[in-house]
Amino acid sequence: MHPAIAVDRALISDSSLHPIAERLERGERLGPEDGLALFESPDIVGIGAMANAANRARHGDRIFFAANQHINPTNVCTLRKTCVFCSYARLPKEEGAYRYTLEQVLEEAATANSTLTREFHIVGGLDMKAGLAYYSEMFRALKANFPHVHIKALTAVEIAHIARIEKMSVRETLVALREAGLDTMPGGGAEVFSPGVRATIADKKLAGEEWIAVHREAHQLGIRTNCTMLYGHVESFADRIAHLTMLRELQDETGGFLAYIPLAYHPDNNELGHTLHREGTATSAFDDLKNLAVGRLFLDNIDHIKTHWVMVTPFVSQTSLHFGVNDMEGTMVREKIYHEAGAHTAQAMTLDAILRLIRGAGKVPVERDSFYRVVRTFDTDPAPRGAGESSKSTSVAA
Ligand code: V47
Ligand code: SF4
Image (cartoon, rainbow, N blue to C red; front, top):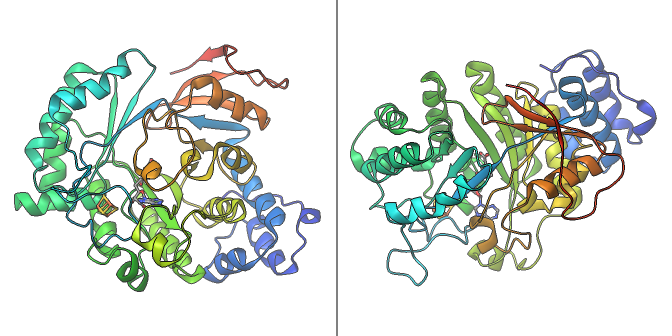
């Protein structure tokens, strides 16, 4: 639950939001009708003010980021034809299909030794040839070569796929992968849980309840995870709220989610984008900020709301730091999934660029580890820095 917060009513112009402000001031949980009212309201300033107050009550002006590196070991995927929003997957014999060997994974990971990388974020397709042995060997080798790097790997959908091809239970699969080196799990594969939307955009994918069940199993084993929602395609506001409600209920039960990341749908180079005649048009900054702010207000039991600058642009991410967000996707290094889908942002961001964005919003940059423990806190810098200037850190805390 949020701590009770003071909302500056002068910033709210839509009177339908006043009952929501009152609930927040009393420290009460928002209901589904409040969530709908937030999505329906055009009062982005009022919504932002409430989300900002809720965020600052938890985190003050500190903004987290992590030095991470994305590795996508295979784009071969059995669901290539039915996840119509995906631009990344290929059939095994299709042009552009790839599956890294262990050597290639280690080669790609090697930059971790020359950078500050503390986390590998590893996700890929549902590849029949990438089972338990493939990932166990990969995680063991990564831990042997980069013992200081945390492994956040495999969505619930990939875990269920590995369990199926190995004829093991989800629990046995998670235990085996953890023994091999998996530390936490990312939040992908959730998309939108409502069966109608799933039938349209991801017909054969693990059902919403099954996605929740995999995360419940992980949380019960002590494996922390993230959660996501893919918005900006065919879903309604009611679908979004039903999705957020399922996430909130699991969090009430287990407390295992570390962060929520709303993912903005990118329509280029995928079937859904063609069908919707929307190629070249992505979500609007208005909707991006709204999704982040509503995530903060509705998910009152998830501590961290993360903005993914690759999807919404660094400038929208920067602005979102005043709309309820306390965490920015990190350095990344060679992001592939959204670039195939038309993201025009860079594939990586330097430490200086991240610091500049956070400081430019008047916030305090804090590098974190994968469990949101502080690695180092940077100074604020009221005067904007020029590109390439070095950054200075003022304190290093454990
Ligand atoms: O589940 C696929 C999305 C997700 C498209 O946990 C697309 O820290 C937009 O979940 N347009 C995987 N999105 C990535 C993911 C993630 C990303 C960053 C951080 C974390 C975390 C998790 O990517 C998929 C799907 O929802 N996706 N195709 C597309 N065309
Ligand atoms: Fe495969 Fe994931 Fe793409 Fe679906 S979204 S086709 S499961 S890689």
